[in-house]
Length: 360
Image (cartoon, rainbow, N blue to C red; front, side):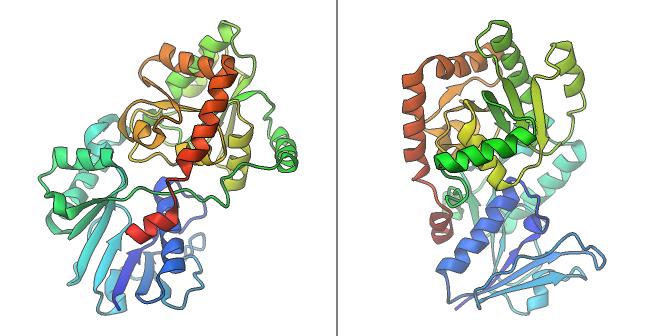
């Protein structure tokens, strides 16, 4: 039996993005399959911060505890192994250390972070390369990036793909779809629509998607709207003026952060899900869309093509016309759309958080 500490800071808030989704599902899946090792879940939290809380895990061998005084895993006494679900400043402990690396954005896509964030992230990676006994990469693309920029032996790196919550992201019944369509209509979502899901920031490439959407509208290829779901990130202030300049006011629906159930409804009812990100370490939305049976257009770069396999239409994210062509192909070719939807459901079967947990 081992004593394992896991930093759960990435999912203290209910609104979490990719890393929080990974860490939360990993902990939940570990609790379902491992009843022998002792897990100590912790996260730093201010004494008067009432918005953050650790998850409740029913398993008796999982011990959640808030770190109010910044003691880190030392608060649990002797720890055999420490797992950081994302890069961080590593604690000073005697046990072994495992770190999950999701991406190398700070090296590959410099415009994806501020200078301060790049400097801090680089410090974390230098520590990880020097001290981690094992580094988990969520995709082969991330492994290649890691070994491109850092000298690290293959034996210290494991590629463990992430999964998808198949109880939430699934093909809805006709009755469920009718109910969800009514709920989405209240938010201004009416069929037909193209769908984008992701944090609104330059790396996600929403600007090029909007230009591709404009091409489809001006060429009378698509008459519906573009629906955008996701939290506002940074460097997105220009979007409103860009949309106005292209005459698309009223044609794009911004929904902000949504629940997983609402996202599932969008994936199920969208004409095409478009995810033209410039760089991803993994790309959760692709898998979520697949499991909901959506037809997907995504990038032919980074891990997007790796995760998608042959189940999506892959395009050059830097080429607005190529993005538009990819969407047009699916809109106009019903056989292609049906084939991609079938392959999407099959591709999603290759990924599960239980598998992720077992390999971890």
